[in-house]
Image (tube, rainbow, N blue to C red):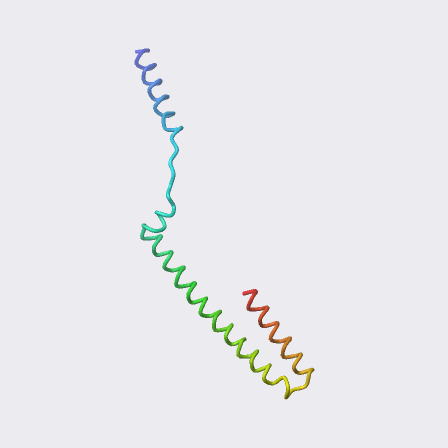
Length: 99
């Protein structure tokens, strides 16, 4: 009986420790590209990026148009008004860059 207990305890002790030294790695690029959840997450991120990019491009083009209008009005308005409009435009550009 003592031999059976000794044998089972040694077997269980060696069996439980035999997996401790094994290293396993997960290929996250494969998980993100091949799995359904990963593909869905990438799709959502791509659509959000495209929509935000369009929004910022529109704001940028609006600021460029405003800059052209200010430059065109430079000779017709006073220097104080011109300076105020330029400062306002610069603050808008700074806000866009912060976003």
